[in-house]
Length: 299
Image (cartoon, rainbow, N blue to C red):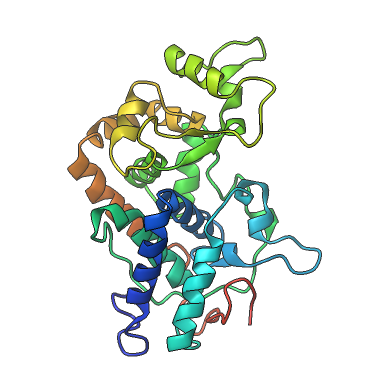
């Protein structure tokens, strides 16, 4: 992969992705969280090959039908961008590159500048299995530090990457089920000891029992539409929403990095580096994979 991979073959590609993504972001302030999450979930399963975009065919469910992916949003935008690019440069630009570019552009929209570079040249995978979108590949909101560190290491990502990429939780909302067990930790109506009691009381008001499965809560209180460092301030005060957020304080080096990333320069700089690394996980290039004509189905 490299910068401007499509310079000779489809010079307009990145401009089309940015224009359509920004057009949607203008209407939908949650778009950054939505497309970034799709990109994460794609890269952690089979690498960044757009396998998350494939629809189920036949009786074998695809990744998007796996339980961790049922709440993903943004697929229609990727389809819209792909259609527009195909009209200009048929059979040239991969869905995997469109997803990577759109994720960057959606998060970057409020800043009106790219927050990280996206190297292009990925090709699209032909396999998508729901069975692979599980806890051994996708980070879980219930994971402890050891599990997270091992998973990220298996993807070629280190501790700085783990803490920086967790910072994506500064954007978006989560369903109550993703953290509810922290409010009844051992089944005796007790609170997870790693969770601030005042914050726990607030969460109980947002997710009263019986829980409405459609109810969502900001992952970063009062800042879920802003890409900033407030997530790290919240985690440091034991107000991370998930067990996986609280887990960042369980390791001395990770806890130190949480404190460091409360400084915007350190966080933005490392997030940029970590997104480049994540976007290169197990990519298909050269003659591997294909360039899909439609992102939802293989050619």
